[in-house]
Length: 288
Ligand code: C2E
Ligand code: MG
Ligand code: MG
Ligand code: MG
Image (cartoon, rainbow, N blue to C red):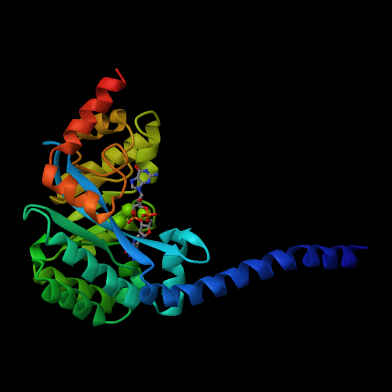
């Protein structure tokens, strides 16, 4: 009978759902202890100027090595941190840690840090950023904040005011994952972004897929018209880089150049500076 079938379906799914919920609860609790236990760390992914093949900076990316769950992706734990209010403490940690580390790099290099929409819920985010700069002595002009368009969507007035205050201090602002949300275009009018980052889902399809190529070309053209630099994320192949270069994309980031690196390796990369172009050329030779 229909009713008992339904009952059976529920009984079938319940244990799995219980398990998932329990795991989330556990993970939230573990995350609240992670900072104190030193389980959080920051890795740095090189960003390369496509025209000159020069290293221009690094993006800081958070890592969590959980005692119970092993390596947990930020795609999983950042949302948990947002829900539980831990994001402010974790966000402050990333800023302080990354700014302190970046003072060891050559002065020409910049540092990009991701900020979550939840950090813009109140104006304290301005204080968090300025405190990190003051404590570490890192120059505001070398810092770039990466935000997604949902920052401006969620709490428009407050978030915009915070962002503008930070911008006035000389801190740059990049629009991350461009093209994946909705009404992306209207955000370009609301705020004078210094950089647009093309989401890697578009880059992944290059150079073969015509529709992705058309979108990438359009975003690069948009950047050119708005005098906003454009970065392609997730560049994995030489063919992708060649196409992006031909279209006039300014910067690239991705496994072709380097995965995110622990800080000692990032420092070595920063000192070498031109390792990027060498490895890209090596790859080209290897691929014929
Ligand atoms: P995102 O800011 O768009 O970062 C780019 C992601 O793409 C990173 O994943 C990076 O490791 C990955 N990636 C880089 N190059 C390649 C490539 O060539 N191929 C592929 N397939 N992937 C590549 P990750 O480190 O797992 O971070 C995922 C997301 O988590 C980030 O996306 C960002 O939204 C968020 N996140 C990471 N660290 C932080 C943080 O400190 N604060 C906040 N609020 N969010 C963070
Ligand atoms: Mg980012
Ligand atoms: Mg991104
Ligand atoms: Mg992303």
